[in-house]
Image 1 (cartoon, one colour):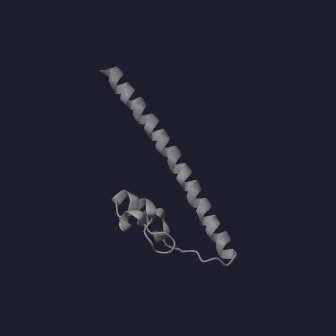
Image 2 (tube, one colour):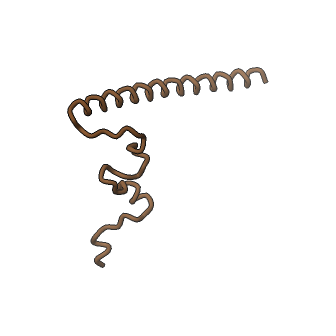
Image 3 (tube, helix red, strand yellow):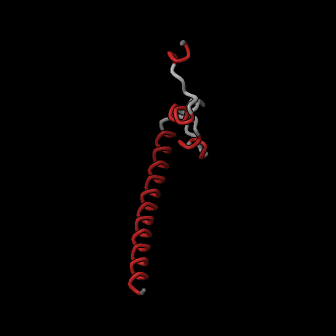
Length: 84
């Protein structure tokens, strides 16, 4: 019984370490993204300030749905299929 508890505790610690590592990587990516936005602004490029520009929104830069999402929900039909 004690050995099982120790094994579970060890596994939990390993998972927690992995999560902590991922959080560090995520923070580094956020920092890099912020620096990239600053560089783009300095070059006169338009940069959105909100989070709505993330890939999770389902829209690309033109406001259209991402083709991957269309393929996943089956709404992206091939033009040849529509002609048949």
